[in-house]
Length: 351
Picture 1 (tube, rainbow, N blue to C red):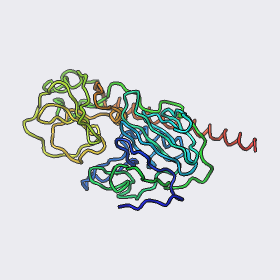
Picture 2 (spheres, rainbow, N blue to C red):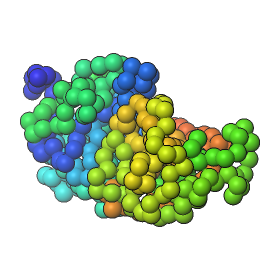
Picture 3 (tube, one colour):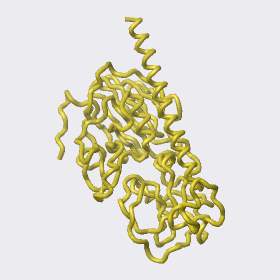
Picture 4 (spheres, rainbow, N blue to C red):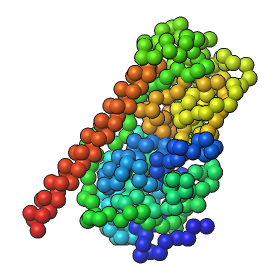
């Protein structure tokens, strides 16, 4: 078991761990050939927002909280950034901290992350410098299924103490507000057709509008007809969708092949599974489609019982959506830095 850090080195103590709280960064993207899934934050956008609020790199290790958030106590004065769809409340003052904001906790103050009121599923809590846990295979992320990374491969427990990985070289960041949307807006999830749903040659579809003839055996047409409900058996491995039973184009299974987050598999029962970040590296079920990278954060925020529609787009649409998401994040970070610069000037003038 990983030893707990000394009180003098710790910044936060877990009072109540919530439903499922773990340390996550951007995962292990280059380990699939070794049979190790990428893992990391289910909603990379919200992780990046939480980190930006406290001056970290987008992929610094933070807490990922699921459905019912944790309660943490500040062991020294610290700024925390909140991303995703969970709000937080400072117990001692009653102050509400909405998603996409940071707050300074005084020593001894308690912060409670609340269940999302917007139907989302996940919140993120970041501290300046990132959370210090051992780097394993290039990441601090918790691989819950495999049992390594983070705090001994497990979810957080009451009494766990969190230290910072790289203490900041300047004063505690001031409270800030993300200038844009703190979480990716819900809406139709955009997908690309998969290899088992296409009758036309792959090169015939590149950057071209899809036509009815590209829909094979009616399965893809039914998939995008929606809506679908997220089954309560869903987790970080994948979302199980409840709706009409889809016809399988293939009998049996395909030869095993690599899969990525967002892959829409069709198992023998005809009920689609959309893979999330803790998915297995390979799979043999037919693949009807793949969720575009820009919409993976939308998947991560779908709580059990949520309704979701799937919409077919082209590769060109997917590239444009990802570029727009990147530009929006860069603009948000620039605005935060400008606000911090003016704050520093104001503080200097006052001194």
